[in-house]
Length: 127
Image 1 (cartoon, rainbow, N blue to C red):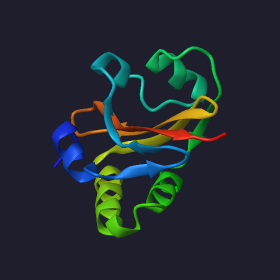
Image 2: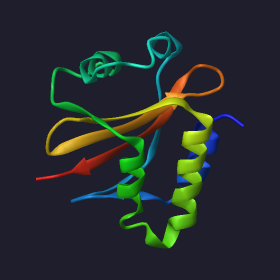
Image 3: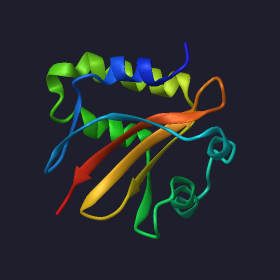
């Protein structure tokens, strides 16, 4: 099985990323042209790929994202584990990025069986 929007939405339903705001996990996909440039070697390349202006960007280990996701989702531990297993098992070259300051967009993306880059996007507010 390969990750797509329907599968992601089913796995992530009801999960929230906890910070100063509680944000849902949204499906995010690059178009096929952008997907051909994956994997990336720098955060700057990622900003260019998603069309964000120059801002603070840093790589985020996907494992760290899932550790952070467990906080506040303790009652959904099995669901978080299933999402992590699906993303790490079904997506190649899995990468995480944090984009911005204070209102930080978080992306965890990888290539599915079709070569398209997809995964999740959420928000963390950190003042």
